[in-house]
Length: 89
Image (cartoon, rainbow, N blue to C red; front, top):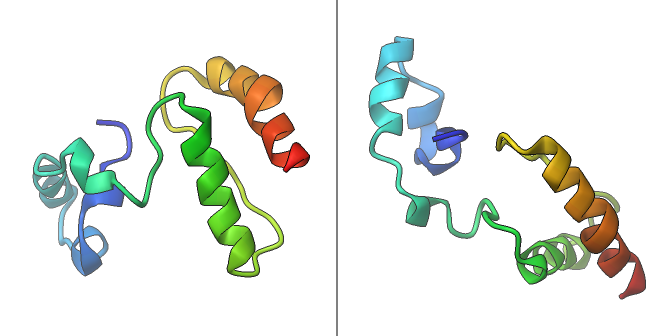
């Protein structure tokens, strides 16, 4: 609903002629389509595991992008749980 482009495969998300075509393609996206590319929910472990995969690949930084409506809630989760977990391991 909020970030369907992550579930639209390949060039389809970039090569559509009209915005209406993107909206039509986005209607086909299901939560399962996002598995592995976007973390959904408030469980801590998937976030930590994803960051560790980036570290193992040689990245020296990551950005978190919260696309939901509860920006303050995610910021509180990050400050109280996520960032301390990443710093401690």
